[in-house]
Image (cartoon, rainbow, N blue to C red; front, side):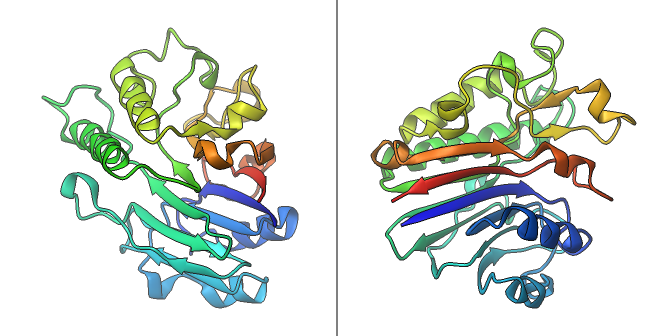
Amino acid sequence: MSFTLATWNINSVRLREPLVLQFLAHSGPDVLCLQECKSPVDKIPVEAFRAAGYGHMIARGQKGYNGVAILSKLPIEDRGDMDFADLGHARHVAGRLENGVTIHNFYVPAGGDQPDRTINEKFGQKLDYLTGMRDWFRESAPEKAILVGDLNIAPREDDVWDHKKLLKVVSHTPVEVEALAETQEAGKWVDITRQDIPQGNLYSWWSYRSPDWAAADKGRRLDHVWATPDISNAAHSSAILREARGWEKPSDHCPVLATFDL
């Protein structure tokens, strides 16, 4: 069984329903994991997605904030969710395909503007959330699993437009990068995007604050596709659909894709 999976922080699934449909028609992934849906589950435009061929959905939602959803052409079983750091936020949902692969869809807290938990509660919540993920993976080692989502951290020097300038900017600070590395190691997760594209600058997010984002190209790779070692070698054809950042009324993120032959 071969299937293509995509992850995308859509920044309001109801507002950007046309963009989701445009992407589904353009790239046709078998599974699409969305973050920052900003919608209760019953308000997600599921009928439009079903008409586009995505007859299965599992989701967790909140009005106006957070929210994660998995749209699938393939049957998928709801495998629950975790509330790390006891935030009460809809930031995780898991589903299992009929081939036994479990997909974890995460939206890690952004962390606010100041990388100091003593003055910025949101930064502390982000670190605590990552600690919760790490501890969970240590306690229940994942197998035959894929983890995707907006992890809100660009870990490598070539995952940001300027490593030195961003060392004190939330999403690329050493404490965040270390926390993400510990989380990745706890589950022995393989970074599929970088397995396929090991060299060169890669970005999946460009700020709305930049009026000419493409020319300035001050991006960060905040969106990730990971897999457990038992299936990581089955992954290929990773891609970041940069052009979606230039679509009409876009999200500030663009889709990240990978294909698995299992």
